[in-house]
Length: 179
Image (tube, rainbow, N blue to C red; front, side):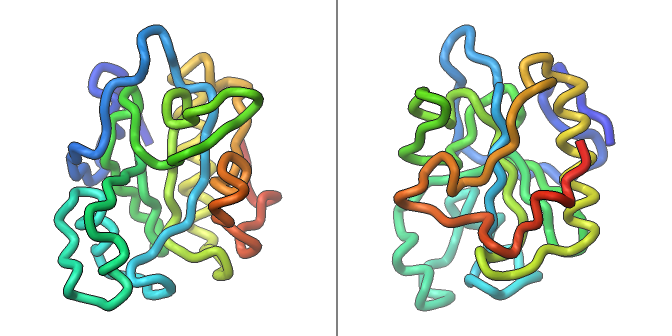
């Protein structure tokens, strides 16, 4: 896995550009990595509805659950699918809209200083071996390319928005991360 620092994109990875992102604040570099879990519809794997959702193209009539997502504008830097494919939505130097109202280490607006990585899954599902492998490799590549990430914490969405979020959940085995 290789990262093009100029573009902020992983080489050889499918990239779906989204406008659900913007520039980071001036002089702010990523210094935190946040792990999420998401599938659409929840608990159903293999579809590309997450891609549509992050691009603002989700057909809310396709599934009853989607009605509550109408008008929601979110994204992540990457999504790691169950079979290990990495999909990128936002260049790493830009701010993805993944953490929402959030706080970490006495700093609010976690999106400003973090990289958001979604895993295809739910708060209660186990993740696949290949997802852990890809996530570990991605974290290593990010640490190599962004000095502020060298010693940066890797946390869950539940750690930065504990009153709102529970992902990646009990199915995520933190001891499986190798970075």
